[in-house]
Image (cartoon, rainbow, N blue to C red; front, side, top):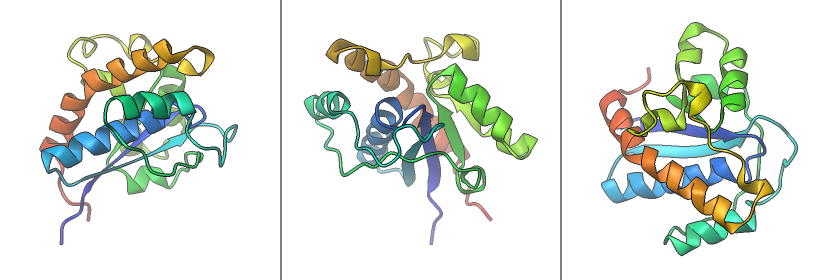
Length: 167
């Protein structure tokens, strides 16, 4: 019995960026035949229980990614022990998660999603954020899609290289 590599994507309310990244990473891992599980959460309870933003669903659907039911939830400290990689979508999420981490080892699991994008990998975390499309329109959600997409191959390569069973 294997232990899948566990990834969680984190944004503010868990209705736009992090569920987009969750479904995109899940689809890419499945297509590659990798034993990776992906879920998502928000740093706040602002959208608790709400579905994914319809504009996010539309962009995913347009790119051939079918979503399942999604209910926004808040990141819990127990996720540090239960996940192998914690991907922040913007710098405020990164800072929040690193501060919340119960140990240096847990904090080391927190990475900016775009740190896996070759075009952004050498930038500082402050320059790797994906702005919140909620305030924009369909084009802003498409921009999120493109930024997330660029990081996916690097995330999958990292998960493959570091996917050792948890004990």
